[in-house]
Length: 148
Image (cartoon, rainbow, N blue to C red; front, top):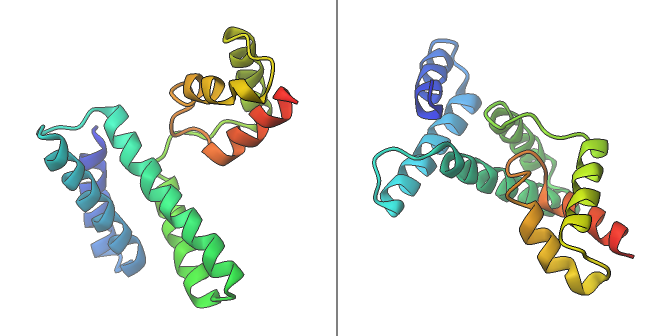
């Protein structure tokens, strides 16, 4: 079942259960996927393209969440946490800290990185490997830690 089909099923279920917050997030995800499809000019998005859209939506919410927390806007923080949880349901299983650490070490060895100057090379090699399975900021911290 494709992501769009899953979203359609979940949207119907959310309507039946009168889950307004969940329904709004699902509709937003469907709109984002459709916009991406139009932008790319193809009818069906690949799994990788769908994952890119989901990752982008998740990142936007996480960034906003930090801003709202620092501004002490608890009303908006609660709303965003609900949205993040709904989006997480459609994301692939996240890698654990240990798994990420192993991938980072292997990638550093793979590209023969020795200093922080090689950060870009390591990041550009590692990101496609963990797409949608880890947060870029978390990977960045691990790469910096191992390049010191």
